[in-house]
Length: 140
Image (cartoon, rainbow, N blue to C red; front, side, top):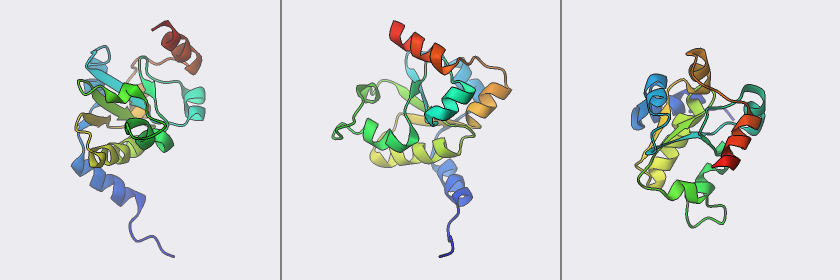
């Protein structure tokens, strides 16, 4: 069966519908208590490459379940309507699609980072290993 709508078309469509932040915008608001960065990447990516300090890890495959209060997998971190949730992945493709999905679910306080973690690292912004991230999470 041929693919009639490829991933690139899906990502391009999502990009027209979602709020996109530049890496610089996200970095400027890294310590803003009204902003919560959300890493969608697989844990193996975090183990290999690290992550952004202060982010929440929400694997892409569980995101819809973690944000929906009716789900048995709901995570209360996503229930704070005063925050803007800024999603990121490796290159900005998964995060664009995920942001679009969350908007379809009713979330309006959601955006994503253009270029994802790859662009974040390339521009020299702070990162931490997964072990450092886990240790920091236990302190808060």
